[in-house]
Length: 322
Ligand SMILES: [Fe+2]
Image (cartoon, rainbow, N blue to C red; front, side, top):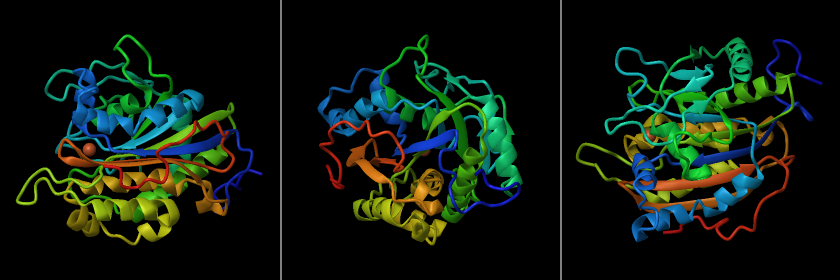
């Protein structure tokens, strides 16, 4: 049965038309996009980074969702100090690739899913989250680098194999939302998916950003492997506990830009086990230092009902691959 109208369901809807199958978590380092765009992926430095995504690319071929809700943060590209929305839901049909100073990345524009986005907007706003709805915006590396990591090199005239609903979280201009708020938004997002009575959909939610990095000030270059891996452990096994970590914990331990990791809690908060279901599987885990001046983290997790099309995993449960 679908949840009653107005009710904040704490149990997920089994056999819902919109099935949240898998969550994917990844850094979205701009230099990774540049390495792909400039043909440097085979260079030893970058090969180590991309090796952590080989499994994922195979998995992605066999587990293609209809739509990805892609949680990321804009980097003062679509939004600047003139408007600072905390949570932006992309409700448009198409999002051009942004010019971040070197011309737009040579990748396809992103196709949206306005019908599902409108449904999510209705449900999530009625669930007490004041989203900003945006029909027209450019998308920067925060959104396109994860797509490139998972779906590989595509030309601008190609099409991404999935529709994307962008969900941008402000973690650039203070005040930023707490991890708890992001987790709760994830729960509202799952309630929205559970209320969908349209066509059957395979939905993935991706949480992107991080891991530890700091771009400026005396601590520029900060990387904290121990903290990053503790974050991954908690994200897997105790996401609710993770919501006790306030934003200064992220800043102190993971650097000023490590706060991007709160984006990941949205995808995790929506999973079955946060709605009295069983724990997700950890299909793939990768961690690597460095990429540019950051730590790269990557996880694929699936809800128990997801189709089991996982390729053999050589990298799972190897948290500290350098
Ligand atoms: Fe970022």
